[in-house]
Length: 468
Image (cartoon, rainbow, N blue to C red; front, side, top):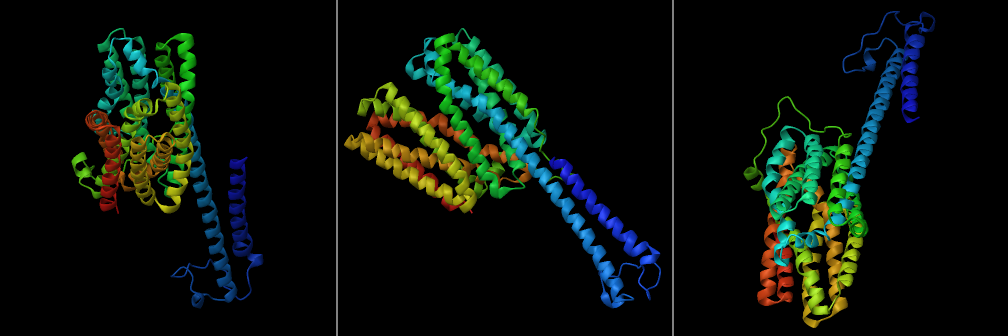
């Protein structure tokens, strides 16, 4: 109906112009007396009343001009509406494709340490399974950014999901530790491909509407957070009925469905006749904007590592929390994340991503100081309250950080530029858990939380100094 209505509007506008020309300008019976019966040339400057043979002729030329401008405006508006509708439809396909995948990933994360123990891994060695994908992403983020700029986004999106499916199938079928680690590395390679391609694709699609970009990114993060809320429940049911290996097969199926959805999306990389030379990783990291992003990425990835490494141990050791209570707390943080990402997108579009990032960085630093003081005072509710503040601030910053990264990325090197903060973040996520564990062992949990606060304070200060 919408397409039919647009065609009717354009047809009526065209018919109106043609009928006007035939009736008021070319039909001899309708010519104004006293005016020469020949086609009037277009005056210089498009319309000069002093050069017209009669005022009525000038009015006629002006009306023809207005008709042409009206038709042009109508046609341009129709084309803009078509592009906007197509972009909205494609973004919905993207979100619908990602949701089943992240439900599977959310079901997998709580099971992965237990699955590693079946291969004889000690508790301290289970981190290998968690960090193996990050190690692969650290190595491949930058090369995949180059591929996204040179070969296109869609190739990486579809291919990355298929590689991810192979990696999870291999992990589920592994019967020895080497095969298990290889499967996890393949999974990380698939994530590096798909994440790099999808980030650049979203940046391209939202380029025409930068004022609404953060809102979409907030919605995307909310969808992913919702999947992570649903995932553990789905995983528990599957494990009870089909065993732990079934989770990896579910993730592989979700990745295959995601690849099928990605295949329906258009390629967005624009090939220009005289494209600018693409920037290397070294050239990009010299940019003050990329250095600002690096500082903020280090801060927030350190906070994520603190959540996974320290918070469960502190809850159990200091406040005698049971695994069920820890799980409930994490579910509450995830729900806060759903609301926070939606709010963060709206706020970032209203006041700008830079303001949101600075505010959230300060809030996270304050939250970890409060959590450390609560540990010293053994104040359980204050501890969880400050962690709730951190969860809200970390969720609000997510769409703002992505929007800022897209905003400062050069168009000709967009894929590579978006891989820079991811690479810094993956490197931080590899190092931070070990360092936080050492600090906690040597100086106590409260000192480790103070260290997280310092990371946020320093990262935010770097961002303020380097960002524009």
